[in-house]
Image 1 (cartoon, rainbow, N blue to C red):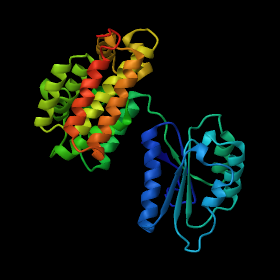
Image 2: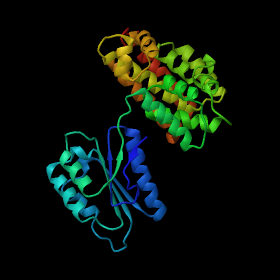
Image 3: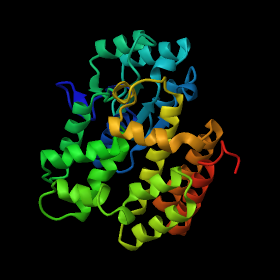
Image 4: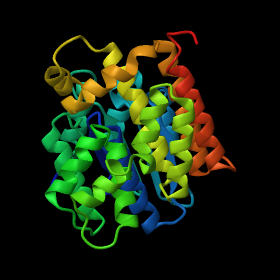
Length: 329
């Protein structure tokens, strides 16, 4: 969970989000935008990458308006700004414009440190968004997600969820949201087990396991059963994505004991052993192809397509086919 400075007003003239955890960076932006739109529903939001903020762009975006509209200007990867653009930002920090909130997303570290120091000196509201590399940090994140939703989960339930899903914060947050929406009362280890380690044919992770193993027919059968028993499509795309990413991570990692690789890759040791067995038929091109297919399915189940079930079936077939790419079958 992001750590904040004493000044926690999201409408402060400058918010500085520092770190490399994409979910937390996005949430820092979302909180500022939500606060601005609560104050003025017509708030204009400009979300720019570092290469889009050319010299002079910030001055144009922050120039006084006849209508005195509220505006949020977001600059991502601020550590990559050109020297001239950094000068523009530093000059703006000296005289910020009323009704405008500037949000700088910075990876931290040595690159672009001059801008980081200048923003802090200017009194920026700072939100720390570090990568959560330790299992204990991810466990604390899951607990905070349940609390934020006003739900109670046992320590064992939170630990089971982290063990099942791993290090991807977006997937952890999605799983917490799904459990909170579907389950009444206290969320315990048995509940999490039913979703993630319970009946194999109803588990989204079983669909993913069969797909990354290249077992197309079994993966499709598990998919149809999961959908018929009410498993949310977004959990299925999340499980597929996690399965393919795990293949990619382990295939590019240095050899070593499961415990060492577990620390390096943010996976529990038992999962290292399972993924090693699953990755035999995979090639680097197969991983890339499968990730594109899963991304397309994810867009489809989130409103980008007319038939989420068909989008999922296409993704499962694509992943299972990619799982045999090294074998050329």
